[in-house]
Length: 251
Image 1 (tube, rainbow, N blue to C red):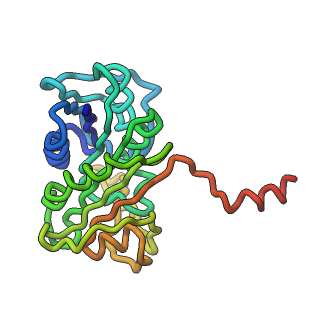
Image 2: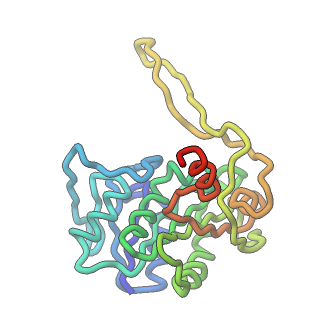
């Protein structure tokens, strides 16, 4: 099995080390193609106004001057000798649950793989929010088993898998939940205003570290309760329930 490993935290992202270990436990044909620097929040964006470059760092290890989506395209169309059988994206430093999935470059890499007809799995480790520091130990312990179970499945067309590991020690994990994408019940985006040395304002967009009260069965509820969340996501964004109402309006 040929596996492509990528991420949005960049070629030096700490979670990429964990994901490479997971991939190599499954196959000896592993290729790493990742952004040359962090591209968190890039979403499913392509670089089309500037040229792309890639550089080989080691055998089967490359960095690309672009987004996670660019990395998948370059890997499949230019770098790898043949199509991968599996794409693993992550392990992201931080959650990709609920509203996060629309911003996430980690999810976007898996989306691009799915569009290309390649089985794709995004993996994220919640870190540093509830006292566990920057540890990827949960992903490292459970990742191989989860990936092996997922690759044995037929996802169906347009489906990718989103796995989130809770912020706890491996021995505290309470189980694995199959979940639906949740919705945050608090304002989680912040705009932090600061001043430069000349007194001019500049801004950082960041995320609030607050716990809401999510419904049972959602990805948020699972990770808040120290459970691993596995969520099937679909590329077709059509809201089926709204179709009849629209047909009534437009005849």
